[in-house]
Length: 222
Image (tube, rainbow, N blue to C red; front, side, top):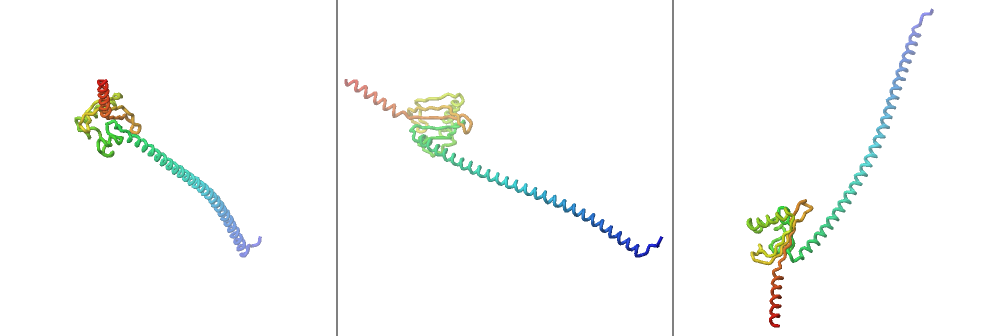
């Protein structure tokens, strides 16, 4: 066997180092390739997620815009309905105000919640001064309390009440008043209320008396 020369040993060592370096480089390249591949896959996943999020945001925005349009349409429709209801209420109020008889609506505690012009003129007050008050506020505890109890009894029993001759509580004079009071269910408060009408038929009765008197006189002359 020949002795291995130093240069040969050095050559082998360099070859080994080169091979080791090549192996390390290959492993590093493989690891780098995998890392790049993973990064690329994650980038693609993120892009897909971003695209999905973008589509979701667009759908959400479209849904919100649709909801806003529907909301605006409903608001416009509600305003229109309220305007129509207000117009109808004004018509009904005008009709009630043109009636010469007193017309009023009371809640379950006999408080005024609707009156026509004849009632306002009889009380000589504005509508806001009457609404929310009952007969105790107008006529005192004795007279007003009796009227309130009578009206609650009408609501409790469900019967109508008719009165022909009575004292006008507002003027304290005897008049021939035809009063009708009846139970009336009020939808928006969900309770039984009281609807009332009052006609002053004093003049009509006096005219009938005068007519009867004239007829009698005419009969005597014959």
